[in-house]
Length: 229
Image 1 (spheres, rainbow, N blue to C red):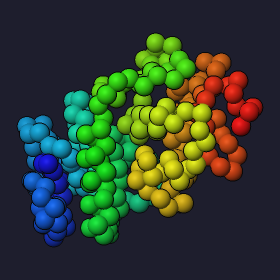
Image 2: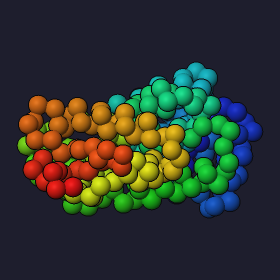
Image 3: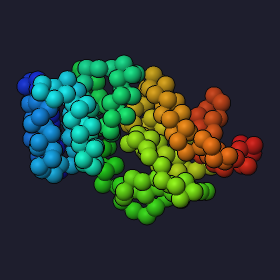
């Protein structure tokens, strides 16, 4: 597995590089955003660990450029920015996970393993529920054969719902499966993303699929079955 670490703090970059190499990953370091973008475009990586605050070109701009060029390599955003707004901005820009500094290396390693594993599993037949259709290969989503544009995290959330239809899922379950987080303070971001997804797939359809189970979480099912919960 080849990992690109884009980090301008030499101590942090070398610390991450040594730790990942000890786990038998092949690691390359870029010290600024421009170099990181160039390497990501020129070479094939299984994962990119990307700092936000970088010289020459910030990490968020690098991430947006990669996604605009259809480079869908999983990205773990590594940064000192830890507000809810910052996390949402990073995820909305196309990152697959978000780890704040300072961090414990075992936590970073667990996130790396999860992202690599998820990327390897992103293959297979289309998932269909009601009039929704999701393609795990192209990451495209349709409702009533109308394609819907979704962000990376909205896609992850919808995929989790569609793989667990007619089942009540808690915010903790969603956090663990879609973000690899377990702590309660993250649930506000989950509610934000559920609302984003609702606006895209349920608005103006007359048939809602995402339903709130008060005090518990959410359920993905057709309207007529909700009353039976």
